[in-house]
Length: 586
Ligand code: ARG
Image 1 (cartoon, rainbow, N blue to C red):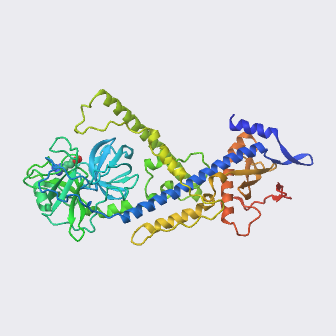
Image 2: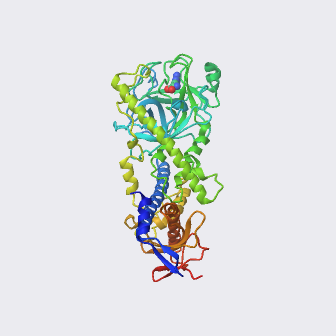
Image 3: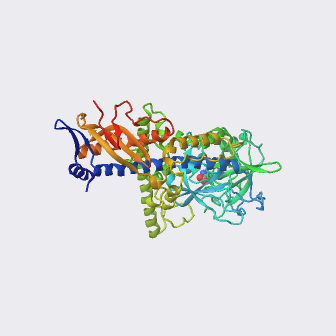
């Protein structure tokens, strides 16, 4: 039975009016209507708790990432791996690197098909070439295959959360050919993948320094790609030499070149985005990333060294992107699809996820939060369409695989036969992930103040302190709802007493509301409809008021209490007598 019909029946069945001189002055909502209100209130409470837990979970994840990034040593190769990149090993032509030799080398895959190399530069960031994403910048389609271990430990495949091509990348000239890829989950410090070191300053090793390149790229121009990682040593060439041999296409401000003018050893198609690293001598030698494979004129041809994006020039951009707070950029599709907010949920707290949309809003806090929530939901709908397109593409690919090989496919790599994930498998629809979220018990014991979290050591880990402050602020703001265990999360509307003489233009009546949450009681005044349609209409506002009343009740707990608490505190309210609201004396 529709809600409106149910309410109509309930209202008609038990009118409860008070009369003066034979005219009704006040009426109470029937127990049935109160029950419906209570059920909706409980749902609103659950939604508010989920949203608070989600906000905390996000900051905890950021803290974890930060800590992880501070702990993991960069640029160290695994012990025991033959550390002898042969001078004549070739990516073009082919020598295989020992397994686990390049722990920062990753493979970027589009729909399971390997397309480019990449370099792990932090626990959740991969640096690669921007041209890899030309025409395919939908992060839902990409995955990253991390490095395998020195004993052949299996490589892990991670989903992509966000792709950030350099804003000045020029696909015509390959100027600024760099992109950052944010992983959905950071690499585990126990796993074989390790980040490379980024250059500290703007200094680069001098021309002639033998540096290393690695990747799964083609063995010769237009040839098949390699099944295993290949490596080679190539000397850095001076900017003058690069310009002389490669002409105006080489822009020394953002590109460097490396290789042999005699030809024969070079990176090639499929190696793009991969590393050009040089070892920094010292008691504990480390590898530092100076170039990202970008382009070349053929592969390994005499007088045509390979071209690499200069990493030192982009140091500031990289730092800025990797340390940016979540509210400084639009939520990604993966984050939005993982978010289980529902449009009809009437709580006003915009989750941290949507804060980006509220940052330039000049309205009141609640109208900005509403606006942010709306924009978040709008973008999520667009993301859903994208992921649907993704699913269709997967089905199409599956059908093509059944029908035989695609004639247009240039690369000789056979894609693992696997169809794209369906909507159900995407984050937010993934039962395992959902269990992770709903299973995290952040709520403490009923009406106990949450225990302060033990703070991890922040010394020497920049960016950790503000995150911890943010966490504490969120915990404080939401403590009132986080401390309620799920089984006690029930709102009870005990009484709604409406003043029949106060009908507004919109058909609502001033009413006094008495509600309870556990042993917490609040009384506030609001507007209520007494017909099915107006009652349904007034419901969301009443629920928001009730949530606010409970929040301020628990915040002022211990302080001398006003006889009533509510949104309309300026209003003259009914007094509670013998557990029932009494109309105010005129
Ligand atoms: N653009 C190529 C790719 O997308 C990389 C080419 C490198 N060529 C070279 N001769 N070094 O994989």
